[in-house]
Length: 91
Image (cartoon, rainbow, N blue to C red):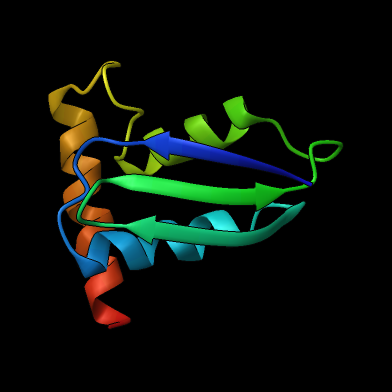
């Protein structure tokens, strides 16, 4: 097992956190996901034989939460709003 700590953009609320947790925990090899909405940090424990940090970063970006200090364009921000709305439904 390995732990990756990833600082992300666009994380604003519990809905965002729920969407991130729901999507990341479904990835093969992930054993635990924690999202700190106050610091915009996602912590993932996973089997590095089944998953890479880059796969996690790509998945987060596809949800609208790119790694901090990377490309955060209008489309990515729009994806985060959709992910947030979906996550709020589950709250």
